[in-house]
Structure formats: structure tokens, C-alpha cells
Image (tube, rainbow, N blue to C red):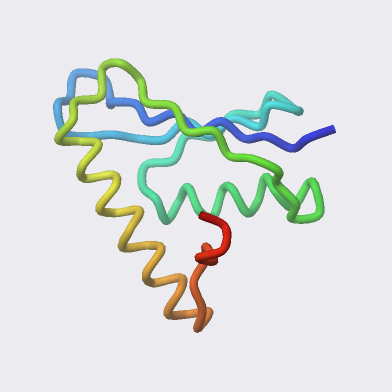
Length: 99
């Protein structure tokens, strides 16, 4: 059984700027709403704990209502979080061999 999470970027109702991530555990069906990437990171860790911290895949989906400028903001925030985690760990999250 593969542990797969689906992460869907969506827009808050009646907003052109506020976004959130709907995180779904495809095995249990449990869904979490994350208002930012820090909350998302914490929820992934919490859901992953049910599987001993092992997650096989995270599928990213963009809701059709999400405008490109919001995706740019999300990408920037993800890049910033990745750099912070790499600084904390003292090594890259993704090895160059994996690309």
C-alpha cells in the first residue's frame, strides 16, 4: 500500500489573494485545511506519523480558480521554506542525483 497525500491549492471564498492548501490522506480520507505553508508542513508531519513518517508521494493539484500571480506567491513561499529547512539541516532536501 502506497502512502499518497494530495495537496490542492485553492482560493478562499470571495477572495482574489487569499489561498489555502487542502491536504488529503488518500488512504484514510482525512482532510486538513492549511492556511499557510508552515501549517501545511506541520499537518503533513502529523498525518505522516500514522505511517511511521513514511510518505511515498505528495501529489500537487492547482484548483482552476487559482490565478497565476497566486501560484507565483505559493512557489516563492515554498522556495523560502525549502531554504530555511536546508539551512536547519545543513544539507539540500533534494540531492542533485535525484534530478
